[in-house]
Length: 189
Image 1 (cartoon, rainbow, N blue to C red):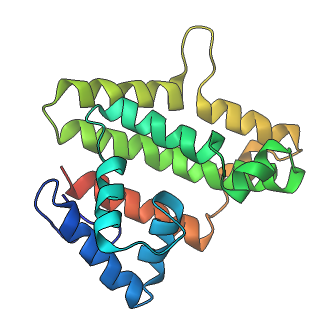
Image 2 (image 1 turned 90 degrees about the vertical axis):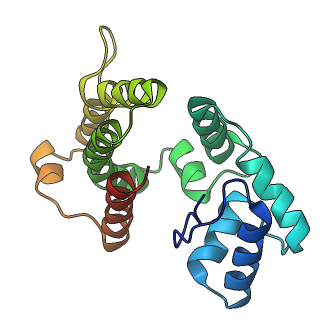
């Protein structure tokens, strides 16, 4: 098991040590660790034993697809969605235009990350899950367009030519996040 931020290693299911690590990093005001806690566990400071229980709850689902769907629903449809998601749901043109550009870079990296994961595992369920990801992101299905096609069409609906998206550069934070995904997909099991 690893810290999702700095990738420090811990024994599998050693949530107590992970909680101690996060408590130490939060106490040192490490913004990446604090932000991760705020976004995924709690915005309130927790004692180490309660934080350990929260980590156990967070990582308790052993089915990869179920875990991802649960986290996705929490972030996008939970009681307190991220402010960006709220703005997306209100169809702010400037947000949707920016999303057309920035998410394009994530989709391109996502397919590369999925491929790296497939090549690095012998687990059938993980391979099938990632193959399904690649198909839905880049190729679509019989009567469904790919996610990248839908994204490009959304940009075109706001008068953004595809070539403008293709030839743009990601924002610095987007580039940093993509670099992190690339590293995780290639270096981790």
